[in-house]
Image 1 (cartoon, rainbow, N blue to C red):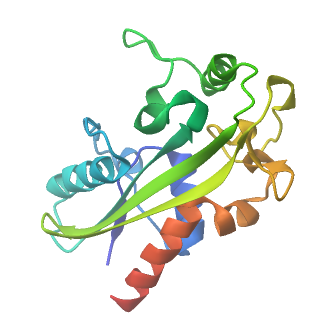
Image 2 (image 1 turned 120 degrees about the vertical axis):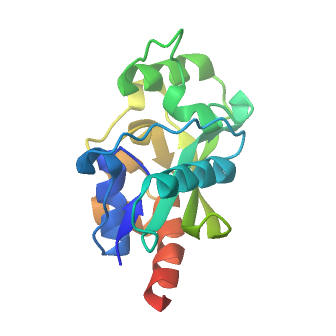
Length: 198
């Protein structure tokens, strides 16, 4: 059984592979052009779009596809950047670096005392167009102040996302620690349990 992950993000692949403890294939490493239009307004709908798009491309009908859509939702910013987390700050097709995205978000939040936020991950496990399961999980936390960005691990918004009960950002956790409590780790644990029964 071949399991595909509908992403071109090698960081996400490594993370999910460790969570599931099983090898995954991703399009970019197999010479497959994959750039789905993530036009939906919810994480779960976007995850399903990705899964279905990759399934259409695959030649082996028995292959299983996993897809996720995730992002950072900041309460004081009315839930933004949300489903647009990967495109946050991009203008007129011009992409900015993740470090620039982090700084833009901190500038937008400013000195607002409400710092609560959450990462959300919707993960789809798809056998075919009409047979799928979607799991959605969260990691609750807070956005740090601009002078508190820290940590070399993880990726994305991890250096600005604080876990108050640990006193550390996601980027300060080991991969094992992060996978044990993150939004993707929780969703992946459910998906992994289902896969072990297939």
